[in-house]
Length: 163
Image (cartoon, rainbow, N blue to C red; front, side):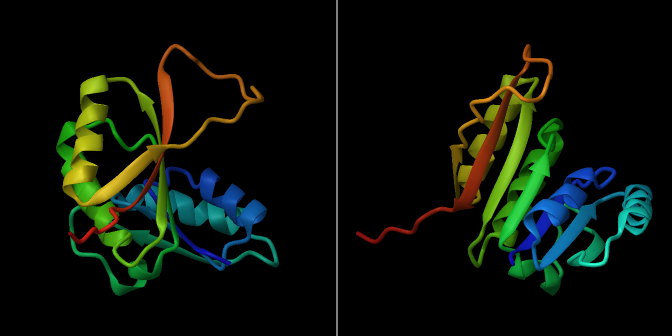
């Protein structure tokens, strides 16, 4: 099983679904706000099942030094993280730190402001990360507002090339 870390876990729904459907060996819910983390802890406790993977609920403030525990992450997940221009560089730095030993991040964004989103993509490059747009599913199972563009970026460390 993979070790998964979620940035900005909200109420924890994504993590609970991933734990149930994908069975990672470890899932770490993170957020920068203690009140959000308390809610995640309550939701994990309420929805716990016998074969639930190792689950951690941790504070992670973007742009600050990471705890050793975070460095062995295989998959980083995040949704709706790119909205405040002041948080873009710390987010990119945190992604670079989390992916320094390999792994892949998947960041889903509703593009409400194209300039902010472009700034995020540029910051990823500056942080020595490369990204591609993951193809959306072909079926239209979920009903959602399609007036705002949505993308999922697949992010990895930039390949180092020697000349």
